Length: 71
Image (tube, rainbow, N blue to C red; front, side, top):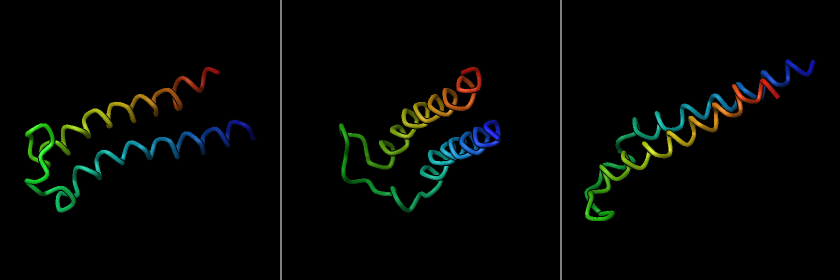
């Protein structure tokens, strides 16, 4: 029973990997030149920001799903 609940938990955390993909694929949300962030158009700043956020989310999912199995 405990293993089954752990599998459900990891499945929900694995869905976090979809967040960066969907955020970058929804172009009408960020298809703007203004405002500029550090003189970079918002269009590019949004994509660059999701590179870092995607790495953080990927690391979080790794820790919860794979490292959590050993605990």
